[in-house]
Image (tube, rainbow, N blue to C red; front, side, top):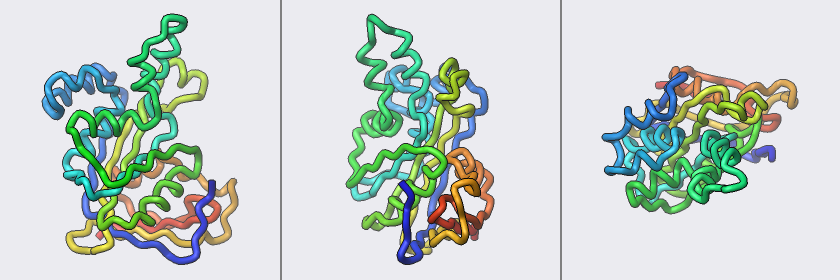
Length: 227
């Protein structure tokens, strides 16, 4: 899927939270966040669920918000454990290994409803796809979140992320209290080979609060300017 544009899309980033745990193991992440979630919830949550949930929490997610979630590999550790459990497979591991699990864990733990929820996956053009959906949302505020968790044997098979990370940002049509201006427009002279803007790249731009101007898919150009 390649987003196409007939007009420039613009939104303002009004809040941003990121998590970059490095090589932290899931048990350490669980211990670090055990006070941030309802009692006994963390023991059932994946590392990515904890990371995404911790970035969403400060944004004060509301029932009238649109929520867009982007992840290329999602619950890698749960999927590895589920596959390792054959032939006596674990229903719990299957449930936590599905793609939207990280966000669902956070929403269920806090009994939080949202107006619309769009879980998205993909490869090199995932940031462009997720941003396109987020900027087209009709709600007054849209939350865009995403992340990955580092795999073990799936990583060795090039089927997992090399890093764990998570981010969540709030997008608004109003510039009041804005941190940055974000626009999407028609790409200029891009081909597939020119694009090196992965979800990890997008995270690094957000985490470092770096301005960016360039093509992020063959049809999409991103401008991100911090105020």
